[in-house]
Length: 275
Image 1 (cartoon, rainbow, N blue to C red):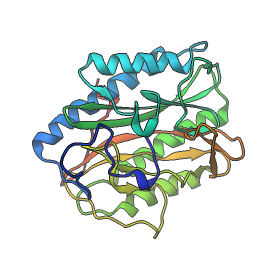
Image 2 (image 1 turned 135 degrees about the vertical axis):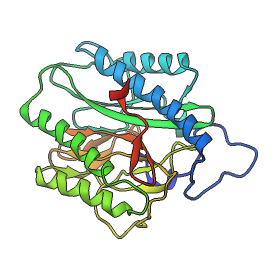
Image 3 (image 1 turned 90 degrees about the vertical axis):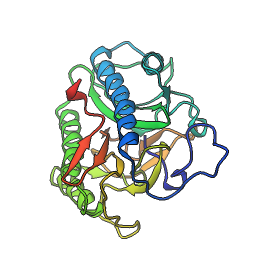
Image 4 (image 1 turned 60 degrees about the horizontal axis):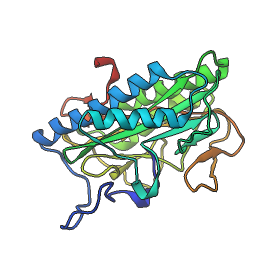
């Protein structure tokens, strides 16, 4: 789940009695093991949704399924109630870039580009991940956009290890996206994740001097999540105060993983391929 930087380090769950900790947190081995479990719950739900989604379903159907499965696995939905968000998933279709609200009135159709983003809160820690799904047969442009969005995520992840900088990730993502003729949404970024759904640092997907170029350390856990548009990078937020759509009505795609920084590289905690 993406959110503006001023929401970083705010708790998803009711605030504890002690003061919320801020800054970049290095997770202990025990905390990392819990995060592996929360991330596996998220990966499981997204894999199942990718296999069951079909034309004629509503985004509310997917939301109900995700909440049911998250709770069956002993966790609670990270998104539900987060700053008032009503769903357990963000479900964004076609020109909706991010934060689409699930609705029984929003039907999924063949040819849609469907983004499903969800999180699970398990034993005090969050996992967070997003996938883009080609519903049935999609256009060549849509198929390429989805492919390049996923490739861009992995281009960024491949840079991850202790000692590298956030700009190394951002540059790898930006170069791949631009080489393929797409644009990167800049209003939303990735983020740290752990005790809070959104923690420091902001994990941006393009080169910038406007945010700190943090040096990565082993034990950091990051939600890396490029959002690509087929046209202009610019978005606007609808009157529901959540759904961000492309300004030019172009298609948008997004992928996200929760990633652990290690001394020698990385571990993708929300890896669906291992399920």
